[in-house]
Length: 200
Image (cartoon, rainbow, N blue to C red):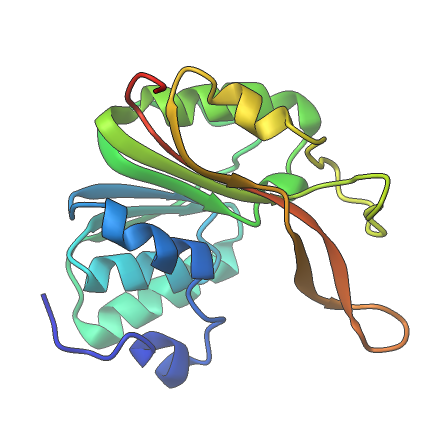
């Protein structure tokens, strides 16, 4: 464990801030093995590593993984493994305490989502956790961006009906993208934190 401030990597390397739901999930977690599904430049992976997790970080963008590898090398970090991974075609298993995917699934092909979530669940140890945050397309907040995939109301929580759902909501949030007037685009996000334990 280090004594770096929480925003150390964000500030030093101009990364997007650690996702607020990852920060909010930490009190439920015990440091162990984490899998970051769609890690980008590593904002969540680096933060979790700083909190004592051994992190496996996947992204299909070679530039993102290269950037993360540069930070790992520059900081002399251990406990982060990176891999260029196409989430549209990967099948995987493992034994992770925490599997997370934040603002990634809307970029994937719809037919890959059920198997990806099934693999995330199967790769989670008993009493481990999954965190998913992904864009939705709803009547009141239609998604203006032609993402390949968006969740419908209740769809994400249905995947976890056998788990203990710690948090689930479909609140309105904002993308980093802006509309033609320069305003950040608002839409609903499905947010789920669930524990691999019998639903209560």
